[in-house]
Image 1: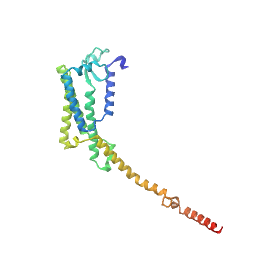
Image 2: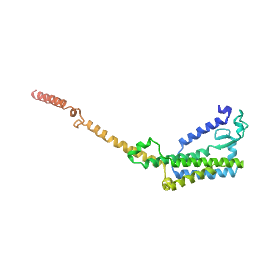
Image 3: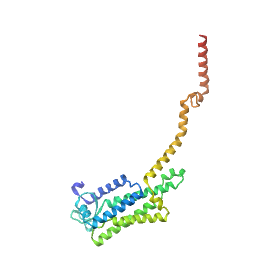
Image 4: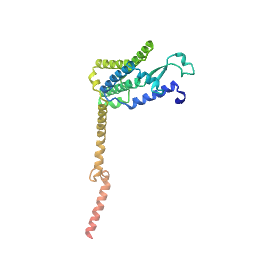
Length: 255
């Protein structure tokens, strides 16, 4: 349908699916990696938008769902034909790259909430909501940066690198929040791999504790002399079978 109509709404739907898939599959790993990635793409975006027309030319030249399209004139919303309308462009990278950072901050909020709780309360809190200060701060900062990009693009009527406004807004807001909460060092040192290892170790400890009693029971059942045998549970059968074995031994001796 999209290949035939090329409608901008279908383009935006496919682009949204691509963004969600990327955010679900890709993980930045650590806060340092995310910060370096944002700073590197910050310089890259500025260079290729202001220094050359490569980014704008590629975005306009490729007719595919690699960007979001927004009508620049409200009058075009009521018209049935939108092929000749003017659009504002927003590349998927301007959503996915900051989105990976925001998603990591959500996992950091979860890690902080669960690690600060007691061990006996973790299982109960995993099923309930938790505070998300870094996630909401980054989300608000991203919205503010994106609004700034659109306003500058509208007033100057020129292409703008969105990361020029998004990266400083998100990083500054998150780092200031970390300083206010006295968690700056914790945030800088945060690693998703270490958190995953800690969770796996905690689950292994719980499994070991739960399996200690069944393991002892299974070992006792393997030994007929242990209390786990049938004769220990039923003394009557124990006496009955012992009397039969004694009678058979006496008959063998007489023979």
